[in-house]
Length: 94
Image 1 (spheres, rainbow, N blue to C red):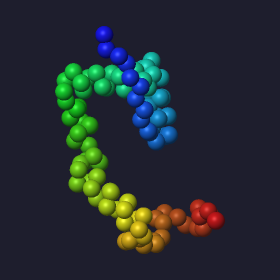
Image 2: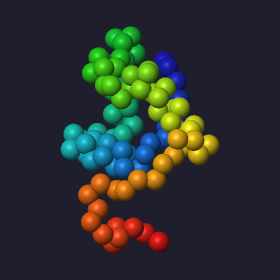
Image 3: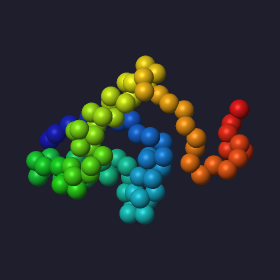
Image 4: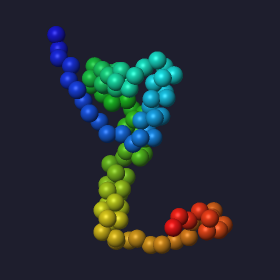
């Protein structure tokens, strides 16, 4: 018999709430959802194609995001601009 292990993951709080809502609609817990996902991937030795084909997760896009984050942390290529669709200063905090 195999031994269960504890796995810790970090999720954005909004993503977690959305996942919990979907799980609740289907009578699942987050733990069960991730177990089902892991079992499917483990048994099929493959990640579902619709996950892999999402353009957000394309390796080139991820590389561009990492570069932009690094630049932002260094203050490189940062420019102020007007917000689109804002008619007055009521949206500004401060």
